[in-house]
Image (tube, rainbow, N blue to C red):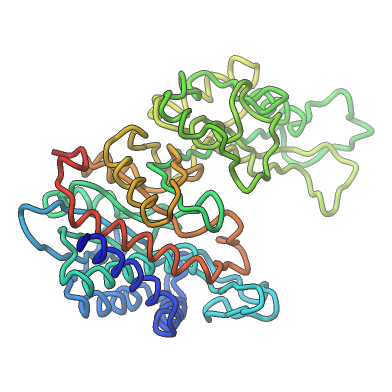
Length: 461
């Protein structure tokens, strides 16, 4: 009973901290750093120095690193050789602020509060500064209530996730022994909806390919030559159409997994993904929309260009280009994705199409749904929330999860504190203000439970 009361104290304190003016001021400070990863002059190191000061005040040690020219921060707290070691991860970089495109004249680098709508706005609030602050505040509450975390912690913060995490793999290889941990607990990406606690266990991989077909230099009159001259736009359209069937189901051999594991299928049963904004009759036959997003592969045409759509003329274009992206789950040979597409195009009579893979690529990786650590984390969130969380086998998008599973060799559990409609990567990025205390309480409960667990209880011993 005393243990339960102490846990409740930590959870309630976390909720209080996330609801007070200090939390909002701390979040405003983080957002104020214009950490656009594509800007070579962005104050990336200044941001990490600011974060390091906050963790140092909580009794953590901090050390900076550089890899491939990019800054990183390692934050650590070691409490005993007999305790589990948990690795955390976050990124402080963002996409461009897109100033001038936000509603009501909002500045992307200033925390803006809409009390009527119950929303807080700012670049990075969802991806990923706000999520990091939630976890940091939850740790603060546990330390205040217990006097310790109860486990050893390392937290790695990078500043280049939005441009493909350059240097992250190299740094993890270099620090492999130092980053030795039992489990990754991190937060990024969206929940299934704004107020439903969610776990996901990895991420689909992502690979992109540029397809180019050039037939000549300069256009040709569509009347004088039409019907007797190859049109690269039509030819490339046929090539693109061959990648899926008319319902969007993949047709490229080597781009499809064999099956969905039963545990993953059971976890997704009855789930409505993406806020319900899906087409039930699109994609692989026999799968639900949730299975198609979180346990299957998909190919999308991201861009297609021929001629000048803004100022068309009566001419057959000389070339056409398209960008094709594959999202894929573990279970296929991702070393041969390009070769598989090349073979498919050749087999369908499109050997003249030039294919170029674009980098960087995220590899697919995920912890099995039936891993004991997943059950432990889900039970902890259910204890705090009063109902089970949603468990997703993989995030529909991509994260550098494979670095943690492959280089460091640890299982991964992500507890996101965002939602699909947050407008990340767009103007008006925001989160509901009510999400912060709820999410911080959930994480305080999870950190508390990790502090009482043995590695065997986590399925790690």
